[in-house]
Amino acid sequence: MNKQLLFVKRPVGEVDASTWTLETNPIPKIEDGQLLIKQHYISLDPAMRGWMNNSKSYIEPMAIGSVMRAGSVGEVIASKNPKFKVGEYLAGTGGVQQYTSTDGKGYYPVDPKMAPLPTYIGTLGMPGMTAYFGITEVGKIKEGDTVLVSGAAGAVGSVVGQVAKIKGCKVVGIAGGPEKCTYVVDELGFDACIDYKNENVASRFKEECPKGIDVYFDNVGGEILDIALSRLKMHARIVICGAISQYNNKTAIKGPSNYLALLVSRATMQGMVVFDYANRYKEGAMQLGQWMAQGKLKTREDIYEGIQNFPETFQRLFSGDKMGKLVLKVIED
Image (cartoon, rainbow, N blue to C red; front, side, top):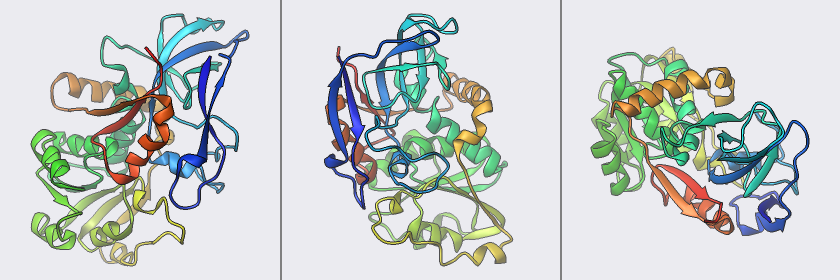
């Protein structure tokens, strides 16, 4: 049998358990051209909150009654598609369920001997690709830049900062709580980290970036984006990757009131969606994998178990009660 988490109610504001229902259905039978994947891990990402809204976005909103959309990694256990073999491991978007049938479109092979499976939905998956292309292609970092990263202890921000350090930048992170800030500096190698929960962010910006910032990689939006706008160097670049502080709003999203700083500094603010770089994922994964093998890039997954625990695990994205990439093991041993 196949345990599936179905999306049954569009949330308004914060998400609660009534958004989904857990069902047990027969494992799907495959037809010619299809394969069956036994899913081991699924990825939990802030973007999932936006997929629940019935509004225009970079991807179609989820339909009521559909399996909750999610990145996943698992093993091919049956195949009627000559491109995929039984025993092969694949990463793709299989949703929050234990088994999925697919024609293989959008899936790519991964090697559990080279890295643990959860890494392929973390640093070597969508979050890693977001970080790599976001900071190098959109942020256009160069040696000597001062880079500010919000959500610095998260799946994307942690990789952004490390890539910037590898490229010779000064990197300042923003994270919530002393434990996360210590992790960002002592383990990931950032030059400094501002604790937005316990410190005056504006004052610490001035202290850590006295001459301003060249690049701000934004994962949170809201007030912190506004403060960052006040500290721009000439021709600075702002990468808009996410705005997790705004995702559960019941009122209008708070936009930046300091946007005229873009004019004064001749700066740019550009949105970034990882799917735009899909044809270059292999390039990004090879570079990130090389840095990992060299010990220059560290990865960390925060793994929880049980598909029935998805709702409470999902809340950790917004409470901040996690470290690194949030992953849920859905297959039962």
